[in-house]
Amino acid sequence: MKQHEVFESVPGILRPFKAYVESLNLQKGDQLVYYGVPGTCTPFIELLGFAIRGLPAEQVFVPLTDESKAKKIVPVADVGMQVSATGVRPNPKAIVLMGGLSMPNSTVTADQMKAVIGKYRVPLVGVCFMKMFEKTGWTKTFDFGLLIDANIAPVDVWK
Image (cartoon, rainbow, N blue to C red; front, side):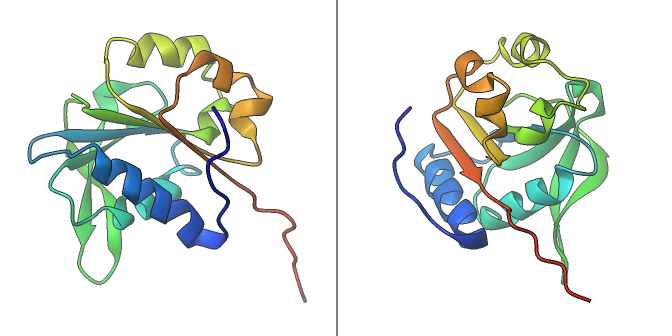
């Protein structure tokens, strides 16, 4: 992969994500399925989901690699997008891997993830921070159609 563009801030994550997903021309009944770490990846998935809330495709969150625990991502009035309690069977037309899966403290390996998503022949998006997919070798394992790698450093704390 070659670096295509450089953006800043939250719109720099959401705009290219939305443009890429729109280019997939997902239809009603299609699924965009996110795989991520519960808790840490969830807010970022909900944020990405908010960026594409107007698209007709269904959005689904799979915690780690356990597709039996997949949940719909739904709009909540006056809140945004939220992972619901409603279970769903994943059948992706596109997949988003979140960088938390590749973190050193994650229980998921690249090979395990590849085994789970390898049955699907669909476009693959990666969203990570601080070059985590590169540092852990996941960029060599997965053929991302789009990879968004954002920085969140420094983190200034004032008291």
